[in-house]
Length: 134
Image 1 (cartoon, rainbow, N blue to C red):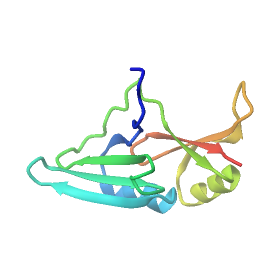
Image 2 (cartoon, rainbow, N blue to C red):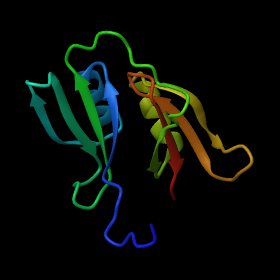
Image 3 (cartoon, rainbow, N blue to C red):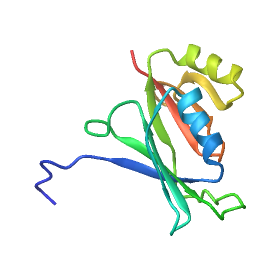
Image 4 (cartoon, rainbow, N blue to C red):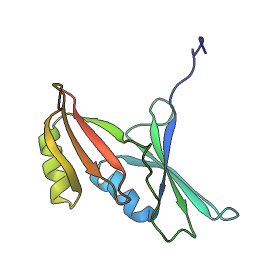
């Protein structure tokens, strides 16, 4: 497609097993805001949208909670991660670790590059890459 004027990334959807734990992680620990949340009783699911800014001009994350799901989701081998830019990666990781967040890769220079990165996990095991943005 050659003409993509007016296109933009709206959201990334991930399925979560415990919506309250996920909302606490994304809002309470990563500082996003709950932008909207709606139950769909006929379909037995809830959608919650979280992000750092209004959906009109920011990409957000859609958390999909299926009410009858008891077992964890398989993350698969194709999914990678969500990346967040942060102004102080070391301080951010210290705060997240103090809040009980699993830091799977401590902050430091990227292998074969100069970017400073870290990785954390959300309650469902999804990887979140933090990238130092000065």
